Image (cartoon, rainbow, N blue to C red; front, side):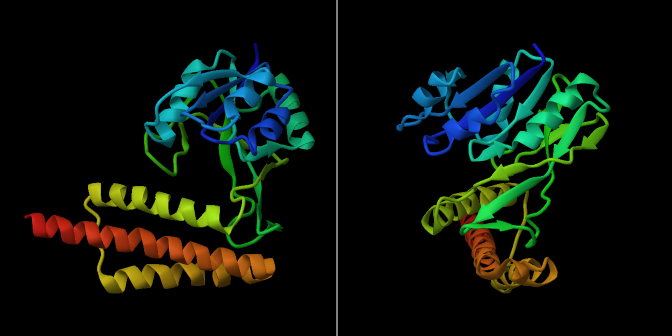
Length: 251
């Protein structure tokens, strides 16, 4: 067995079918599901995936659980809202026939508000997702997990397709949730901020994405993306500020 694909899910019925179909070239597909109430598990199983039900310890630990279930020599980690293009599938298969490294970064092209985003800091968005089993693990964090490895890393040419948000409402829901988790992580590390700092972070985020990273070239979608990122920053640091104040009052 040469390639295991690992996916973590919860209520991904909208995406999981196309995701698994895009990796049909793999020797096995492993899905670790954290209690979906839609048809995620049934769809995955109907497409031949090995589905395991688990609680939710956070993104990093959950992906490591999936990694521990992989039985092939190589592992490809993919999110349910991502797709492997035919070009990427062909490149992965060719590379695994004669590997030049033990870990590979893959560019990712994301769709936002109906547009493929090629600026705003979203492209090429290299993510380390393909690696030889035993050479890498996911960082043990609740959000913003990444693959950690000391092995040589090569970058593939072909890309993932990424559909991160179904609509504006789902983006707002994710911003609210992720900002709470991120603020708690920052607070646990002893980070502090002030009200001017909260505002400064939000303003700088907009300037960085829309101006420095040329989000204006992505049209209306680029403007909306920069605004939402600024709001996410405001949420994160305002929640951190409130946690700081609560901690001071507790003292």
